[in-house]
Length: 119
Image (cartoon, rainbow, N blue to C red):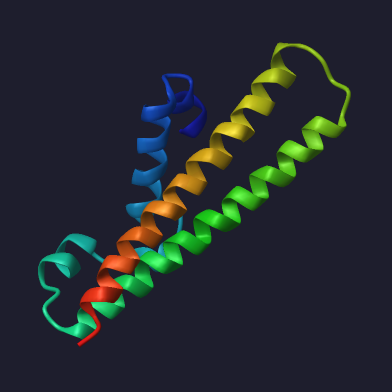
C-alpha cells in the first residue's frame, strides 16, 4: 500500500500513512471510534483520554521513524549502486519524514486536548 502510494507523490503517501495509522489498520489497540470520541468530548476526562490516545499514536510514529532510520542506515552502509538502491534510500527517507510529521501532528492535537482537560 505505502509503496504504490509513495510513487504518486509525497502528499498521497502521507495521506495514506495517516489514514492507515488513524483507521486502526496499523494497530488494533487504536480501534476506538475517534469521530464519536471527539464529537462527544465534553469533560476534562474525555479530553484527557483523547490526549492520551494522540500521544500513543505519536509514540508509535516515533518508533516507526526510528525503525526506518535503522533501515536507512543499513542501506547506506552497503555500497550498493543503481536505481533499486536509490529507490530504497528515498523510500526510507520519505517514511522517516512522514512518520515524524505524523508524530508532530498527533502531539500538537494531544496538546490541544490536554489544555482542554485542565480545569
